[in-house]
Amino acid sequence: MIEGQSKARFFSNKMGFILSTAGSAIGLANIWKFPYVVGEFGGGGFILLYFFFLLMIGFPAFFSEILIGKITQKRPDGAFRELSKSKIWEKIGSGTMWTGFLVSSFYSVVAGWILGYLYEALSGNLLHIQTIPTAHGHYLSLMEQPFWGLFFHFLFALVCLWFLLGGIRKGIEKCNKICMPIFFVVLSLLLLWSFTLPTAKETANFFFQCNFSKITPQAVIIALGHAFFTLSVGQGTLVTYGSYLKPHSKILSSASVVVLTDTIVSLTSAFCILSIVSFGNQNIQFGPGLIFETLPTIFSKVTGGYALSCGFFFLVFIAALTSQVSALEPLIAHITEKFSLSRKTSAALVVITSFLLGIPSSLSQSTLSSLTFFGNTFFDIMNFTTTSILVPLGGLSSVLLLGWKFGVHKAFEHLTQEEIHYLQRRSIIKKYFLISIAYIAPIFIVFVFAHAIGIL
Ligand code: PHE
Image (tube, rainbow, N blue to C red):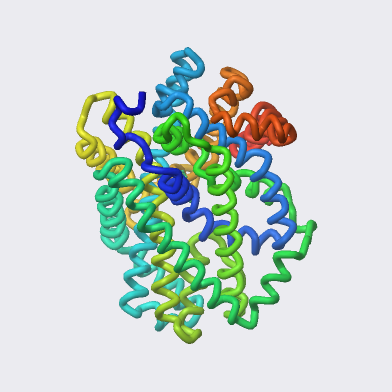
């Protein structure tokens, strides 16, 4: 069957799939969000909680989506239709692709800021920043210029387009095969450097400290939400990447490697950033403050601060690039097939539309800052609607489709013979998947969702 199909519509090998999926998973959530939530919610206790959710909802949903793609060899809309034999499910599958597209519009804005800060780092501007008020002033002076944000948002879109034009092997896979090794080298250098800091030991102790008094209901929700956002669940990406696997590919080991790598990257980033921040005697700040304000004040104080600042922003840029490419791919693949367009035309159409949709998010910090809805800017609304509502719903639809509509037992018949034998020998692993996909993951996702929309 495969011989008759163009080879270019598959990843070239297991490594291509692993690197591309890891590239999608490892993103701003790992390097930006995870460190400050670990700092905020008391270290080791929060990490344990996060591991629990990762195992109970993140991994099962992640595995389900890859399996849905591999079984059907179709993009989310076709895949959902084929497994459910229903038009409604097809619409739900389509919806997940649009979620990825909506996420891409503001993800690109944030990635543009990262690119802008990379430029600041390269030009040495960050080395003059000594205090938080100066850092804050610098941050505001950049954000208040509408064209600064728009320019880097545009530049980032162009870099993504360049890779996306090339298709699966020559585009996505190539992007990840170049970027991910560089990412791991830069992260390892950052880790080695962090070990030399006097605060490294104290940070390591913090990771093993289980201060459960800091585990508030908010911490529980954050750990839960983060467990599937970081794995790119619920946005059509994993179903699409799964459909680029040849039907005889093994996915159990590849999926486990990706989840493990994503977790190691989150822990490493948290270790490095928290060591650096406590070395500078700074308190952890939320959101943009951490990367754009706290870290620059420290770069100016340490030896090798120039290389460190450039390396750090380059690292975050790569993480954002490989994630953004994966968020845009489902819709590109869909419109290429549906309207029989060339890959290049559909990539250009989707990237340009995502860029245009990102403009109001970009201007939310400047020209459109007063355009608010219940105190929220356009950027806030996009962020909240997608990450807190549409992503959990997308993840929920995948586990329900596999767990209830199609059936996990039936789905597992599509694993390779070797994987089926493995699961027969290790029945506990099989039970884990059956229970987590059909029961635990849906219940927890409903819980996050209910909280996000204020029911709980
Ligand atoms: N997983 C990415 C991150 O951790 C975000 C992402 C979600 C990317 C969905 C692509 C698709 O930042």
